[in-house]
Length: 349
Image (cartoon, rainbow, N blue to C red; front, side, top):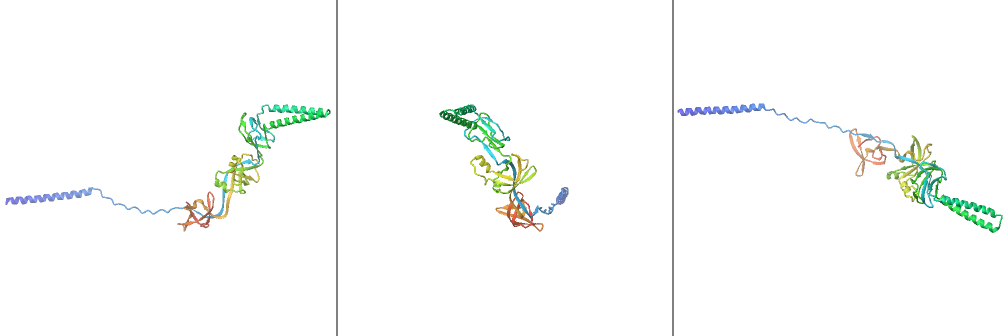
């Protein structure tokens, strides 16, 4: 009985101990939970209203379109003569002129080496004078002596003429009054071939403008007779195209042919008073012109896979694509033949 009482008492203590342990664990768990930081709630992202896209627009307008080609042209003479030895060549003794010199017709431009030719001409001239004197003296004498004197005079005259002509062939003379616009760079002793261009003399009063164009599209758009606006020394002058690559005359000169193929020539109705060969002028050639057409900035026209269209703004915020037919285009504007009306808002790219 005593044993049963002891066991029962032990069982009650054991239960109390277990209960205390459980209570202690629960209290520790609760205490631990209070020590941990409280989880923050996830905030919802704010609702952002999308910004309205801004467009740059320009109104289609009625006006004129002018397509032009501009460049810097050079005044040059269209009346020039080429000075060259035609009979035979020789070695240079002296070149007496340079580019920019003014010459008179007959001035010696280039002198070839004479060797002893000038002396031979003088000897022939002396023999000719003696023959003339002998002929005069024979007039009062025998008829046979007069005939012989006549033949001797003819012989001496032929000798002199041939030598004098040969001497002249050693000198290159100015073919006209004017300005030297080209002189070959040669020195004493250099050999000159026949028909080699040595000097070009030009008339400074008969001038035109040459405009070199590298772009073949520009060259092909220019026609003879189209108007030209020329600015020289801040003054404006009227002119017209008188020669284009397509209207240039045929020439076998390769250098001249190459130049003609890229150059447009312009003549002015009135030359500036102070103009000279080689001076520069600003040139504006009108190639095409349209009056009273619908036009928009070039950046408003869009193209894709052969389709031409514009974006039109309607009712303040509505966009609509419209197919159009473009016409004449300049560097900044384009003509709209069909598809757009005056005043419509065109969206720029």
